[in-house]
Image (cartoon, rainbow, N blue to C red; front, side):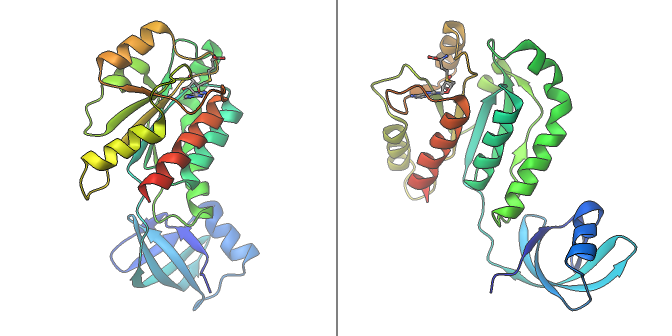
Length: 243
Ligand code: SAH
């Protein structure tokens, strides 16, 4: 029987607590009582936990024993700002698929009004990632970074293999690039960093910048995918090859 999994709001070495809407749901809808057993994610580790008590609107657990955690995949996704409902769908799918980190970036063709309100949406995106992590029984929540200008994100130093999802790219497929990374990384799993452009695609300057920063253009086939489809497809391909 798989115990339902919650992500703790606060914890220490032996106990964890849920507060806010998660606790309200557990108390009101699931009729929480002392002794009930759940999986609790605390500090990127998963615990078999037992409800110790309910105080006000907080549910306190005793952490009984650590259970096998399934770490995130070493995948960072740079997502250009595009229509929020579609971007949020992409964040949810990337979370389910195991990405470790999502960086919203401002591309030249990101719509201006979306860029203006993106900062205010990041907390909502973090909530979406958290809920998707919970639903997919992840033992961790992907980090959704603050919005970055494309230049900054493209230049960030990282030992990851950098792959630019380029809709015009025909010679190198994402699959081939990841298979090469796997070969070069010996027995450890290579970290992969991928960038997805906005609805309008990358500009020539952006492609040149990525190129100068060592990003390799890779294709997902001859069809032009929506940004959110490309984000999910690319993550699926990498996840399937890495796992
Ligand atoms: N304006 C472009 C489409 C951009 S699609 C056009 O109509 O030609 C948005 C983003 O999804 C692209 O910038 C790219 O990062 C990714 N993408 C879409 N289709 C892709 C493909 N076949 N291969 C690689 N990346 C793709």
